[in-house]
Length: 253
Image 1 (cartoon, rainbow, N blue to C red):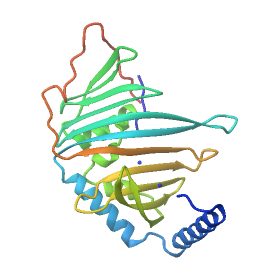
Image 2 (cartoon, helix red, strand yellow; image 1 turned 45 degrees about the horizontal axis):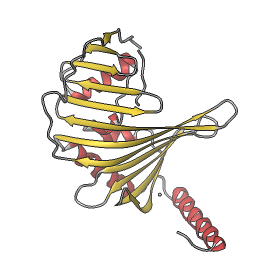
Image 3 (cartoon, rainbow, N blue to C red; image 1 turned 90 degrees about the vertical axis):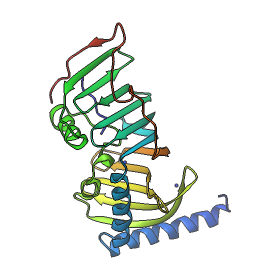
């Protein structure tokens, strides 16, 4: 079983177009005048450090994935997700949507992938910490947990690897929350992130644009709810198969 989980009104038409054109010129000028704006790095670093300092949290997400057909037409698929993290060695990620129903459970000793639609699960022994487990799953099995990069305590270094341009686009409202909107470029990938203002600089939305695929498809994650003091029960980070659920092999990469 192989899986890949693996980040912005109304005015007259003429006036609207003029404002949009000016905004695009302004944004383009910023991107050309500075490689990576220090403020963009500062805001991103504050966000990743804040999340790394949370010993437990829960995030609910709304996700959109674009697929490009041979004809060039884009098709959109949607899903929702929930991620529960307890450092140093517990994780549960669930995704439900158009393409897949899947549960990803790590209990500090083993990693389980459960697909309820197929009524099957696979389980392998895993390293003893979250970060080692995430690397192990990616390298050995090509499995990436949803929103997984943000779990790492060095998430800033991971996100900024290969970045050549970065800027602060401005302010935006995501899910009713005022955010700083940042944009970065790294090789064949453009990505944007919206970070909540204030004492809790949580990521609220990530959009990844793949430039080396025709028509530049996007993957977007919007966090609809954060909880920094969740209550987890004994079943949150354990997987007990119900009767009739078949165990299968998780094939190495």
